[in-house]
Length: 459
Image (cartoon, rainbow, N blue to C red; front, side, top):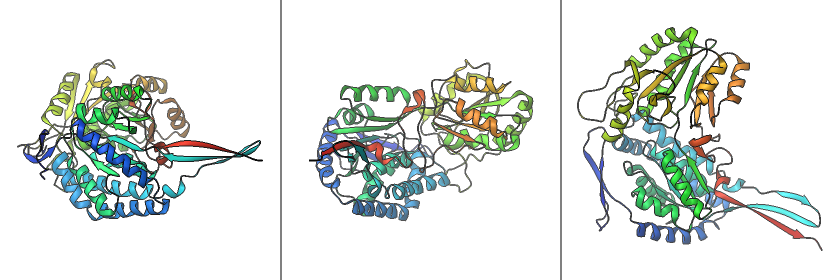
């Protein structure tokens, strides 16, 4: 994949599987962002006036076209991001499903009639304008769709900046959007550096909302930049999620499911359950079972249909994650293939205490820390003692305890006897420094609108 040569930086896209160049992509300049936003602003004026049923039809066609290219998109993500082929197919289908889900929104953005004295009062959900979407490299396709699908459904135009590492599927989705009949400049994808293209997208006065998924430090900077223009922003940031296992739960299920709750996508997941809290009475038994589960993880060429974990995204990210291996005693590890690729073995660490960096900081790699706890109150205190609050899991067969934990844990998304975090039917987002606002769910499109109140006086 080669894009037209200009004076702009040409970025070499390297596959984490082969460590070889697989594409070159032109990086957008600040001037390119200005031009794209200007075109999108004009396109928005037309798109917002497209009849709701027609906008819905176009989004359904976009979903159909994506569905026809699932295998192509999946193979592209395997090459570009090192995702296992099974995961990559799910991600491409998730784009399709999210588009189909929000195709129902244009005809259901229903306002209210509010009883008031002296007249009639109604509300409308108005499209905002150009929405800037900035997504990371860990799940390039679904994280993009979670923003652009509801934004388009609400009548906005979208300018999307993918991560430098993983631009290929986003560029292909932009081509498929045009094929499906999405009007020119209503959905634009521009790869670029975060410090150049991303910054200009956030600061541009015609960008009326920003949706950012990425690290908490970068999210803070984006929030500050949006504050200068009092610009709405949705932030989906980091996490340090806890997997809490009580002695009244299914220990075997907990031990069997715990590895892929953190090692999926090589641990590069903001929802990764990278802290495991185990009640003391079952700690040794759990660790024995966890050892077998970790040993059974198939870390292999992600093109292999049986692969469960592939390589990390880059040499740099592997080095960052590897620093946390000194944060405690390594209990056991999984295996990795020989040869090229940014491989890192799944690793289970027992830190000295809860002050260890591996326990407190987001590793974003295949490393999990395990500690015992005594009581339910201890588990709540340990789990909540973090700046993050994105997701988590609790394993218990006690319904009262499940509800107590659900109300006590400071997280935006919690699963009981499961590790499910994101379903497009339900809202997703974090507490504390894990983010601001919510994505997905039945109100997802409304997050990309302004509510307008209209009063009509009676004479």
